[in-house]
Length: 85
Image (tube, rainbow, N blue to C red; front, side, top):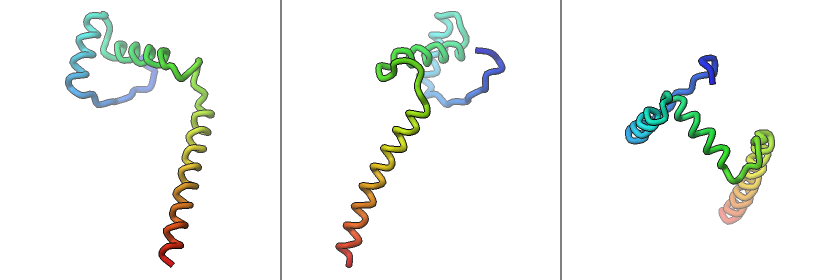
């Protein structure tokens, strides 16, 4: 992590911000370093991945899911149109 990494602004609930500030002090790191450390750990602990996430596959899976939903909605719309005739 360097100063050249692109910045990301986020809003945190006040209680969460206070917790992160306290943990950063205890762990002797900046709030940013505390947040990055915890995010990295949560991603490593993610049970659904066996390594780096294949973003292309994630997009393909999401697209397939949306296509299935769209097909169901299209079918329901056709049924409603038939009833209205």
